[in-house]
Length: 114
Image (cartoon, rainbow, N blue to C red):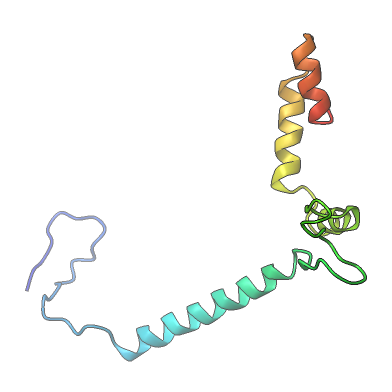
């Protein structure tokens, strides 16, 4: 048996080196946690538009057409994810580059649609 002294994070409870590996309650808790996390992942998946390249309401172009998202796909993604990471990054860039008055700075701001 080992007792930790002067450790404020331990409640002065002796720690035994021959403790049982895992009890049934902790296994049940871990399983419950895994099930909850899986459910969260499934619900987050629904936010992205379906990656379809055929049929009505498709969101992506085929490789022959040049690939990338269609305008409708981009619009639906923006509707479902307002203030996405990319939008925040663009907003930050535009704010920090306001003072760029040179030719190259103006061109960069045009490319970023500032």
